[in-house]
Every structure is written in structure tokens, then in C-alpha cells.
Length: 444
Image (cartoon, rainbow, N blue to C red):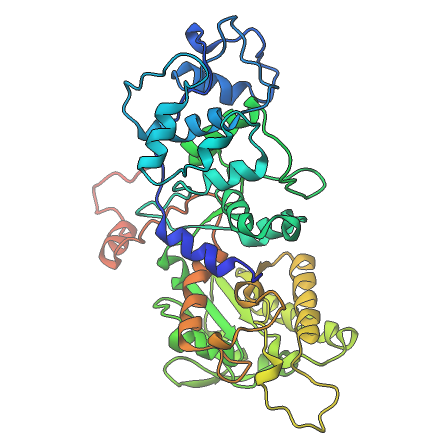
């Protein structure tokens, strides 16, 4: 199975926020949303109370909510589908109370006849993921692009390969949407069941994006890059030409590596030439994104580490006010690289790429710099750059550089929307700085 970064990224662009009220999930009702077996000290008090006070959740006739009871598939489907239905849904009495929701699900293509055959069964975690993934899950607000933070999602599903293949995308989708998460052992445990309290928490997250688990990232606006410098090797050059990024400044050197340091001869997207040192002395940047690693493959990591660290230190000294981000090297495709047969050992291999990227991640953490995982964005299940993304096994196609450029806004994003205020026009700024006219009182 391939890494799902690109597939989930595509999913994000296609779905929109489910912003209608959720629904009830039990048979009885209790006024004011208070239940005798739910207290303020319970972790589920917030979700249960919020939903109950709005008539979304109902308890049992004896005044209990029974939070530890297992959620049935019928109850889960009702929770999922009632928001899409007319408010005056009338439930039949008896064991078939769920039929209006089943009929609606069939009509809308959300459920199948096969789904209706297991309504009395306990809702497993995998079953819940499969059903929830059929709904629009991720917010796609007009002002903020929202994407899953795959770097925090995939490592948190240690048993992903053990999940039936037909359910893996669904599990990643509910993780990405911030609706469900795993256990302390890092596993999803698809065979586990949901309690009624857990179901309430999921529905609350479905309703209120701000209550979701920290798995989403809000992409920064284009203006975020207006004072950013992106520097590096030929990948940086490809990004400058095909990344469709109008704002940032670029400094790239074909064949460039960290060994030449600040003396690197580089050029910008207008083909102007200069040294990295002169560029940093003449300009101050708020953010610097560094793209190196490909031309460093094949070196012994213990030999490479001090050179890498020294280069980063020199950058930080030259730009003390800048926020730094380090990109991992993109994957390579060894089978497509025409290395001479006598070149042993091979330089551009999956193992060397992973070794360099491990060093980059280590240095980013040690020096308090951000890490942008380009490798995981493009690597397939074997850690190889897919043939459709490259022509020579190293450099990317125009379309994949465009994907890279678009994805950067999410990679440097945050868990909350980034508000952006346009700087005042030059005329307004100048007027604000003019001294008060003679005879006028100045503030303060």
C-alpha cells in the first residue's frame, strides 16, 4: 500500500464541512440534558451535556445515559444520519425504531442493504470508521485550506498494516478529520468496540471542528511567504520555476550542497547570480526554508553531521531574526538513475536517502527549527519516488513540483487558522509617522 499523503490531500480539496446539528442516539429522554450517571468529573461530561442540552442525545426512561454501554450500529447510524433528515422524523416503536434512518441512508447512497443486516451488532471501531468516512468530514472553509497533518497521523497508527485493506483509507480519514484516535500503545485496534460516551465525543467533534483532535493543519495564506527565502539545490530551482508560488524569494544552486556553506554561488528565479553570503548580508528575511540533502547522499553520517550543523549555525548567525524550516530530501528512484556500473557503492539509494533525512530531522529538533517532510509527501510504500513523479529518478516533474509548492502552505501551517492583516499602505504609514503640526497636542 502506498503512503496516503497525496490521496488524503486530494480528499481534503473535495470535501466540505458538515455543519448541521447532530442527533439523538437512544430511546428515552430526560429534560435539561442531565443524567443520573453523568457527573462533571467524567471526561465525557462535556460532549454528553452539550449534545443532550440541544436535544441531540437522549438517555433512557430511567434517567440514565449508560455511558459505558456498547454503541450499536443502529445507534451509530442514527447519530450519523439524523442531521441530514427532516426534523419531524417519527421513529416506529419496538426493535425497528432505526428504519427511517436506514431508509434515508439507502436513498442517499450512504448505506447499502448489507449494512442494514447488522444493526443490532456492537459498532466496532473499524465499522465506525468505515461508516463515518462516507460523510463529508474535513472543513474546507473559504478563507482557510485545511489538510491532515500526516506526519502526526501515520506514526500514530502502528497497526495500520494489520487493518483490512478495504478499511485503511477510512481509518486514516477519521484520524485526519480529528474524529478518532488510537490508544496509548499507538494502535487503532479495529476490532474494539465503541461506548456510548465515545460515540458522543465523536459526534461533538463532527459538529464542532474546534473540538477535534489536533490532527488538522490550517494552511498559511500566500502572504505568509512574502518575507520568506527558500534556498537550496536544484530541487529549489524546480520549485521556483514550477511550484506556482508567487511570493517567496529563491536562492538555488544546481548541484549545490552544504559543503560550500555561505560561499555557495546561487541564482534567483530571474537568473541573477550572487553568493548566498552577499544575499543574506543585504537582505533580512522573516522565514528561511532550506532544501538540501540530495547531493549529500552517500556520505558517512558521522562525517556529514558537523558540516550540516555548522552550515545551519552560519545561517542562523547571518539571519538571527529569521524562523528556520528544514526540508527532508525527496525520495529517489534508484532504478531510473543511470549511475555508472563501476560506481560502488551506489549513492542514490533508499537507504542513503533515509539516513540523510534522519540527520536532517535530528538537527531540526536539536536546533529548534521546523521540519517539512517532503520525503513522505512523495515516497511510495517502498520509499521510492514514483515513476509518474520523475523523469530521471531524482528530479521531479512539473506537476509534482506544483504539488510540492501548494503543499508547503500546509506544511508550515498550524492547528488553528492564521489570521493575516495586510500591512498599511505606504502613504498611510507615512502619515502615521508624521509629527503633530505646530499648535496641535500630541498623544501622551
